[in-house]
Length: 130
Image 1 (cartoon, rainbow, N blue to C red):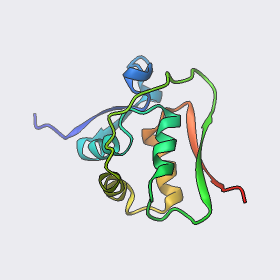
Image 2 (image 1 turned 120 degrees about the vertical axis):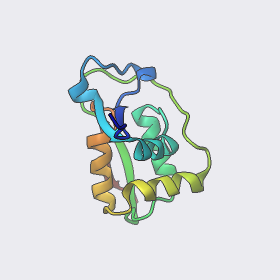
Image 3 (image 1 turned 90 degrees about the vertical axis):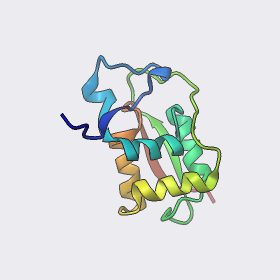
């Protein structure tokens, strides 16, 4: 059988307490290439760390005057920590473009919430305080 290039993505990495025990909530089936781009972008950071990393980057399409916030939705909190993302800003922005170039910023964040991020958390786009 030919390898499809698809594999599991732990929305909550095992390093941060993720498991295979709840595959409907914690596992997304993704292609290897976008998975590698996601790991370049945020690695195995906890949800707050992923939000901080994304907020620190000059992301294409991000509306002026907005910021990302990470909201805990309930359930079990993620262990803090994780990393393994790229420290190179240009590589991270390139990974963002490869993952989300076909989508608006709002659609990209929804994809992150649905496919990539720990299911007990959500990223929201908010107006920066004046």
